Image (cartoon, rainbow, N blue to C red; front, side, top):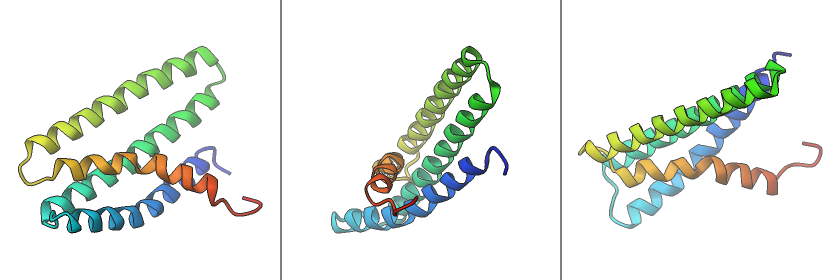
Length: 128
């Protein structure tokens, strides 16, 4: 088994969990009167980035474990953490500046990974 297989599996699970949350979020936006393409584009962009961000975090964690040296692994985690925050800032800056994207719809999916992980802890199947 590949060392990164767990990271890939969790990323797939995160992507599968994002789909119903995107639909639910779009329904809430539509009920509030924001049902245009800007909302769809914002949700798609935000959820794709949230899954990508989670994938980067998972792969960095596996690399840190494989390094063996805790100090070097800590430095790697810190540098990747800063990089992920810079990328998130660029995403939000672009969403705010682009008139075709609903910036709030792009920001909401950034909270999906936390919600998916919390729900998976609650609804985890026996033996999982």
